[in-house]
Structure formats: structure tokens, C-alpha cells
Image 1 (cartoon, rainbow, N blue to C red):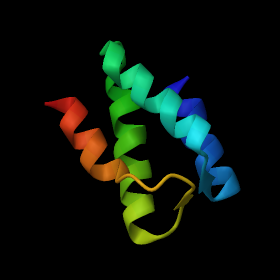
Image 2 (image 1 turned 60 degrees about the vertical axis):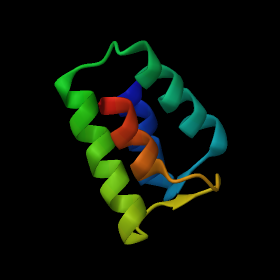
Image 3 (image 1 turned 90 degrees about the vertical axis):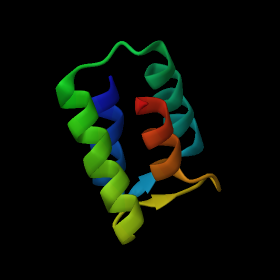
Image 4 (image 1 turned 135 degrees about the horizontal axis):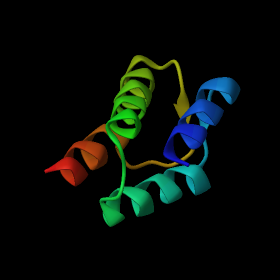
Length: 69
């Protein structure tokens, strides 16, 4: 599901608040694969580069990195 949400963000060019919330929930469960982490890293890089726009105001990159520790 993580990869599907990431792919959707790339297809639309936007990461919705709902999708971001689901991503955070899935990260909190700590049940994900290496492919999911790679997809999230790609998304995080795209958000930083402005290739994907976010609806939410929090920082995806920091949240993602904090969840991985």
C-alpha cells in the first residue's frame, strides 16, 4: 500500500493530507519492506525538489527520517 500511495503522488504531482496520514500510520506500525523505504525516500526527495507538492504543512522529510530511527 505504501508504494501505491507513493505512485499516486507521482502520478498526480500532489501528496494529499489523507495519503500522508496513511503513510505516517503505516510507518508507525513498522511493518514495511525495503521497497517501501526506497519508494518513500524517492517521494521525500521529490517533495524537497518541488516535483511533488504537499497539501499538509508539516515536513515529510523530517517526519520520515524520524520514523526510521
